[in-house]
Amino acid sequence: MITKRWARISVPYFLALVGSAWMIVLFLIPLISGLLVSLMTGNVEEGYNLTWNFGIYGELFGPGADVPYALFLGRALLYGATATVITIIVGYPMAYFIAFRVSQRWKTALLALVMVSFLVSFIIRTDMWAFLLGGQGPMLSFLRHLGVGSDFHILGTPAAVIGGLAYNNLPFMVLPIYVALERIDPRLFEAASDLYGNPRTVFIKTTLPLSRSGIFSGILLVFIACVGDPVNAQLLGGKTTYLIGQAIQDTYLSQQSYNVAAALSTVLMIALGIILFAYARIFGTENIEDLV
Image (cartoon, rainbow, N blue to C red; front, side, top):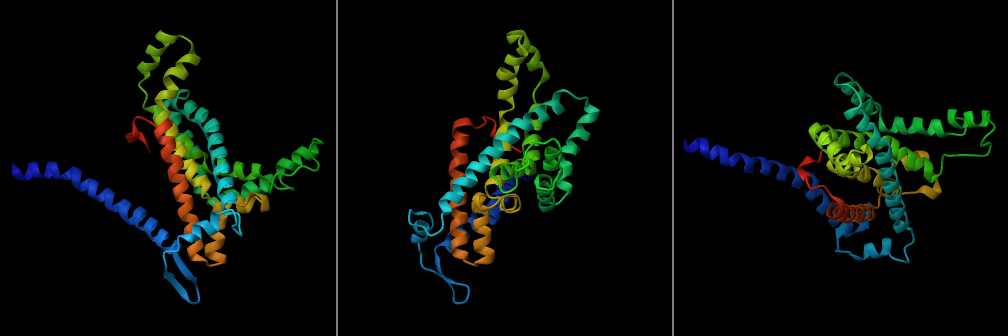
């Protein structure tokens, strides 16, 4: 009896211990390690030493910085926010249609179609997007055939980068919203119809608030992925669309300035943390356990 009681009491703590260990090993330790590397001085040839050089952050993001990393960070946040809004506008109707407008036997097939893009490499998907938007691609060729946009180009513009970010991360918005919509009790719609009558009012007063946890989850997944992504801007953008993700990649791989790359990564994570914490406090879901 004592053994069974002890096992029943200890299981939640054991599960919490496993989750905490996972977060410590895969999140907290890398975060602290990156912060310590950013405070080092030196180079690859002579090695790096921990000198607690907090001045590196002022050198990188101050007004007299040689490279405008603050501009790259702000541009990445703007592109990421814009792409996230686009995925909400496109993804919510998709999720709503799958949840409420198709029969049960077609839902699995439609969800599979949403997920099928993940069967192809991220880089290949982005490269194909570049082909579609390229000067000799089918989109511009069709416009020229119609006599429209002879000097028009899309690649190398913010629109191409934002479109690529939204395209690659759309499933991360559709799936959480679908899960939130699917969990709504259908009887609530009947009660809402009796109270409000108007389908538009029922959606605004009932459906949208009850799916807020899915929107919250989708924003977390999409916004974080978009802001730190270096691939879309590299393949679809140009010099005027250089983002902080590219700066981190180039600084680490090409220049091998590990302390600078770590400092840029630390600032990016802090900025994302502040933005997402503020969003969660102001617009976040009440049912935080519903996040996926």
